[in-house]
Length: 209
Image (tube, rainbow, N blue to C red; front, side, top):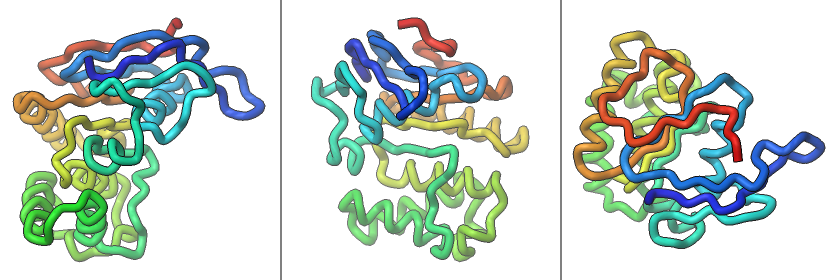
């Protein structure tokens, strides 16, 4: 078990509920969340990470505890649709700050940054400010930042939007390598090109409670 949702309800102020007493378990491995925009996929990812608290019910991690600040800092790597990179900082500096927050040593940060910058075809952009990047480049930089601290679980919100076919294939391969190490990921997508080989569960949205 990766996450356990126990009668989780959530609504944004003044809007109908996104989830109403949702009770489900996400298995370890890879779970794909598929469905159109606006159906709750991003909200679910933020609930799993603890960035949004449920209005009622409980979200529990594999440790049997709610996702807290330590879980966010050390155990989960999150890629937002909006990327949330610091626009005036370079790509490398964005990665370094993520490593600092996770308590990694300077050497570990430098080694991991070089690895993921190269792996995601970003080395030539390492010293470029994030505000100058294209959408696809920002997407890959945000993924590199999430991977840098070597988290137990990845929560990826539309990780292939804005990417060409070659980079979608690279994300497929990256997920396969990630899962082969025994770690897990939950991926929100409506991109039919993203078809990882090893999928533990696939949830179709909108969800029924």
